[in-house]
Length: 400
Image (tube, rainbow, N blue to C red):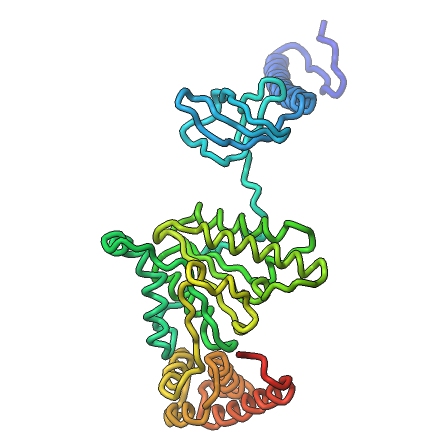
């Protein structure tokens, strides 16, 4: 009797050679189905184990957050829990005890308070984003003029980082900070980037207005975390642009917002006072309104060097124009010296705008190279813009 036909099977042939061939094919098919089912069972077991682990994790009691205050010689640590008091507790085997540092955030067992795991940093994203990941490409060659100012800046910032032993031998602490003051566009930020490039230091840049926060205590916390990040990334340079946004003179009266800015300023003053690592971390700041800065910021011990960045003179203007024109396609006959004479009162940013405008004129006329006429038209356009700015400037000027 022929075997019973299963659902979907092709009818079995009569006994004989075809019969044996059919049996072999059916056997192979069933074995393939068996292997597929075994694979499915194995996958479902893994999913089941994962779901059980996830369920157990969700049912686990909440952990307590603590901060390591001391690492003891016997392998235990002193921690300050979020509930308040300090405890001496053990560390679980899964944690690298050698890399557990003071100040690190950890998760603690709710009952025994044993350290279960380390937690990531709580630094504000604004602070973490202030670190410039890629090294600044600007060098001292990109700065026209400012020879004396650059020498003073390099001796204050670069020298302690590259040759700290010189200060040790003499027995003095290097200057703590440098404040660059000058009109907008004179090259303050460019100088900071060039120094960071020369020292291979971590460059941390923040604008003063970013430290002004809405809620009480937030600005002071940002300042504290900013300096902590600089110490962790040492050697590093902190550059605070537009310092006057947070460093203005303190008033006896003011709004709640003014008082919060003053709290942030006081935190900054405290960090500058306690900021004493030799040559590892330097702080730079820039402002175009030094006349409104708080006197406490300007005293020696905080910003030891105040470097005034003037508008470029004729020789410096010639160097700046050549620097910006070096990457441009320019026809022969352009008189750079005449341009430097005609741009008296221009800042470095104005001279860059002059070169950009000349290039735009050539692009507008569909020419591959810039000629003297392009620079003449660009000079007229930039001069008109500067004259319009002077007319709208309030009496007394914007700057010191």
